[in-house]
Image (cartoon, rainbow, N blue to C red; front, side, top):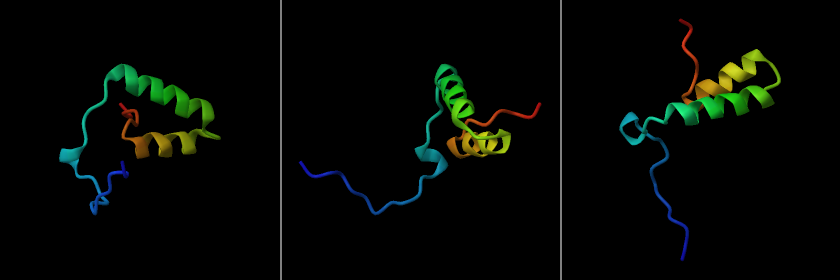
Length: 55
């Protein structure tokens, strides 16, 4: 069976779903472990959409 392809290259907000808190926390731990510094960690978390609030 061939791989599914699409002409759509960008996802809109309606295409994204919220992740469970447990999943987001686990992803944050992995990113923090492998990031080379705090700025890279912030950038990667932001790219994944799981950045921490500055509050």
